[in-house]
Amino acid sequence: MQKKRTDYISWDQYFMGIALFSGERSKDPNTQVGACIVDKNKKVVGLGYNGLPRGLEDDDFPWDREGEFLKTKYAYICHAELNAILNSTRSSLENCSVYVSLFPCNECAKAIIQSGISEVVYLSDKYAQTDIIKASKKMLTTAGVKLRQYRPTKQKIEVDFSIAE
Image 1 (cartoon, one colour):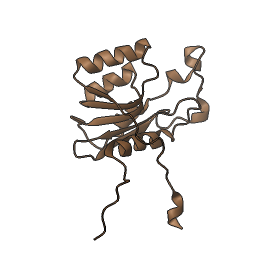
Image 2: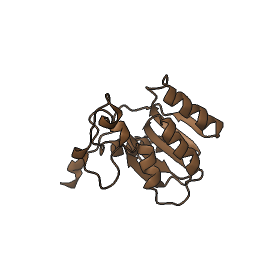
Image 3: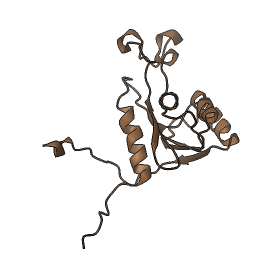
């Protein structure tokens, strides 16, 4: 009797992989963030990446990180977490988890709390010392949202499209 594979990916690897893959849709030349919302039954119920709102042309807006506010991306971009919430297939996200490649900002933290998401699983926390992230963590922890940093056991998961041949 043949035994099952033992090198399959874990649920955390799977959902964080989907978040990272979603981030590849971002047109932002500096930061590609993806988010994947999962319910308690391990079903994906929302995906998002950082980008302009629906109907806006990417070439009509700035992608700069610094300068006058209206000439930077920050005035126009929707973050991955907010897009995943807005793109959700459910009216309620109570007790769902969001997997996100970068720790959520304070504005996304508000949306996460308001939507009822109960856990944030994040890969990078590179802006931990900024006031935006400190405010985010304060709100999320005060609201009882579980925060968990994903520590990869594999550095790479490869997608091979050649299986279609």
